[in-house]
Length: 597
Image (cartoon, rainbow, N blue to C red; front, side, top):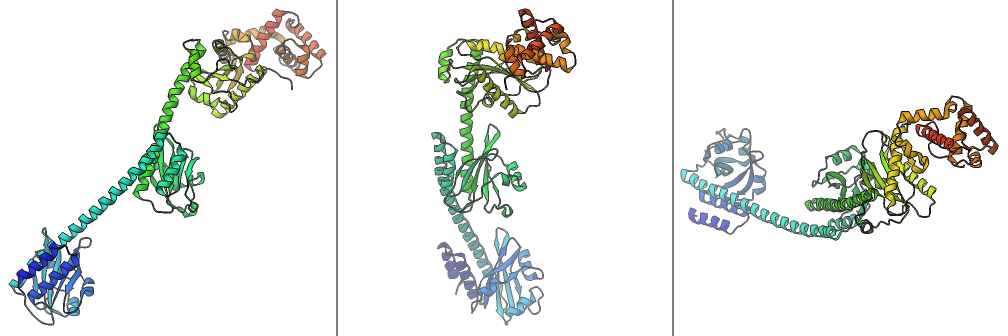
C-alpha cells in the first residue's frame, strides 16, 4: 500500500470527526502496513507524571489491553528518554545487545528490533509511536523512519484536534447549562423580588425559598429566634437552634460570615446535625439583623442554592432597611409634634395630631427623663418611648428631646383615678429603669394628670422643676422616679434653692427633732405623716397604726421642741412642710408619700 492513499484515508477519518480511538487505530494500522512492522503501538504523555501510557496498538492479534497496561519513560528506559530528548526517531536494531530499552519489556514482548518515533506538537513530545518485530532482526531504513515521522505528526494533530473538539463541546455544554441555570435563577429571583415589591413578610419569603429549592428554610433574627420557616413534607431536619450556636464550629462560621457570601456548615453527627446547612447573613445598616438558613435535604446543594439564599438575604435586608427608613421618617414627625406640644407651639397642632392618630383630649402625663448627674443620657427618644410603652397603654408614647433630657407624653387609661394613673406611669418608669440596668443613675419626673390640649406646656414646666429639685437635693445614689404630686407646690421653691441653703432651712425649722434618738425619730415620722395627710389626725393615726390621741400628744411635743404649731398656725404648717420635703429628698424620710396598708 502506498503512503499517499493511506495518508488520505486517515485525514478523511479526521475530517469526518470520528472518535479519537478509531483515528489512532487507523494510524497505527496503516503505519504497520506501510513499514512492514509486525506490531505498531502508540503511547501518549501523561503531563501529571511525565510518563507515557500505552493507548492503541496493531498486531496480528488484539493486544490493545496489554499495551494499555504499559508505562514507559521511567527510570532505566533510556530508549524513550532519548526520543523525548532528541525529538528524533531512535532505532534499536538488536535489543539483545543494545542497553537503551528496558530488557524486561523486550524479553516479555520478544521484541528484537524497535523503532521509536516522537509525536511532536508545538515543540513538545506528546506521544511515542513504536514499531517492532517479534524474534526477527530487521532494520527500518531512512524512508521508513520519515514515513513514521509523518504519521506521528498526523497522530499528534489528530490527538490535538480531538482534544480541542472535546473541550469545545464540553465548554458549549457547560455554557448551555450555565445559561439554563442563570435563566432559572433569574426566574427564581423574580419571584423573590415580587415578594419584596408586594410588601410581604419573612414568612412568605421563607416559604418561597423552600418551594424554589425544594429544601427546608428558616429565617432567624440576630439572636437566633426563629421568625419564619418553610418546611417541606420531608423527614425532620434539625434546625440551627441556640444549642448548636454555642458549638465552636458554628460560632467560628457565624463570626466569619460576610454579606453576599453564604457559608456551609456541617454535618456535625455528634451534635445530631446530620445534614449540611447553608447560612447567609442579613445585614441592615451595617449591623447583623438575622440569618437565612437552608438545609441540604433531600438533595445536595448546588450553586443555584447559594445564589437564591444570597438573594433572599439581600431582599430581606432591603425590606428591613426600607421599613426602618419609613419608621425613622414617621418618628421624626412624632418628635417634632411632641416638641411643639411641650413648647406650646400652636402650628397646625390639631391636624398634625389627627394625622398621627393622637387625641389631645385624652388624660395623659408629661415625663421628663434625664441623668441623675451632669452627664448626658445615651438613649434616643424613640428607644425610651418603646421602653415606656405598656401592653395596656391606650396609645403609643410620644417623645422629644428637651435640652439634654427627653420628654415623653404618655396617655393613661381613662378608667383610672388620678392617683392610680400616676402610679401606673410610675410602674412603667420603674420597669424601664430595671430593663436598662445603667451604671449611671437616671431620674424620672412625672407631671400631674392633664386633659386639655394646651396643658402640656404647664405639665412640662412641672417636670422640669421636679427634675431640677431632684438633681439639687437628692443625696441617695441610684435611679429615682418622682411625681409632681409627691412633693406638691414645694417644687417651686426647691427648684430654685441651693442644696446647702435648703439643708440649713430644714435644720433651723426642725431643730431638736433632727437630733439622734428613737424618740426624735418617732416624732419626725409623726410630723411627716401628719403633713402628708393634709393635717388629718385620724388619717395620720391610721397610717402610723396608732390612736389619734397619740398623734395629738406627739404633735404637742413637736410644738414644744420646735415652736411650730402645725395644727393651728398656717405659717408654721408651711415651714414644716418645706423642711420635711427637704428631708425626704435628702433621704432622711421616705420620699414616696405614705399610704394606708
